[in-house]
Length: 175
Image (cartoon, rainbow, N blue to C red; front, top):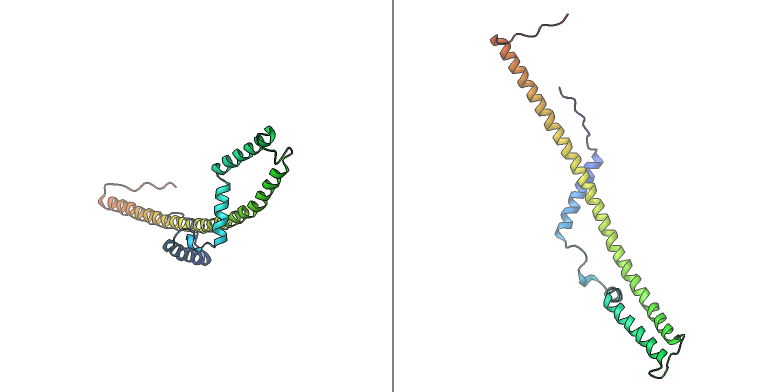
């Protein structure tokens, strides 16, 4: 008889596997991520501001405006409305940063919530996969044990058949 190692799945693991299967079925019927209609106006504004201020287009335009502002005030091509040390420019940039930071943080917090939910979903899927693999290993072990038993019986039957037919003599016992 083959020596088999069995790892029976505990009742709690079976219950968890059933819950994960039910949860996965329910997730398959819904779409990934919240539909855009579920976002509030503030969330849409925060996402738009964060996407705009985080783009190369915004950086290039703002850099061009800053270079133009400084060049016009240093060369005095136009009346110096903000001479060096550019206090008005500093005030405008501080104002922009004061309003942009909360919008960006709101967008990041919302994205963090979405990422956290995705991580929880991934964890559940990984646990389910682990339990499914354990079940497969258990089934393969049972199949292998059944196959070894069947082969052992076949060898015993063939040996008995050969002994009865006289084609084979049993090995001499040492003693």
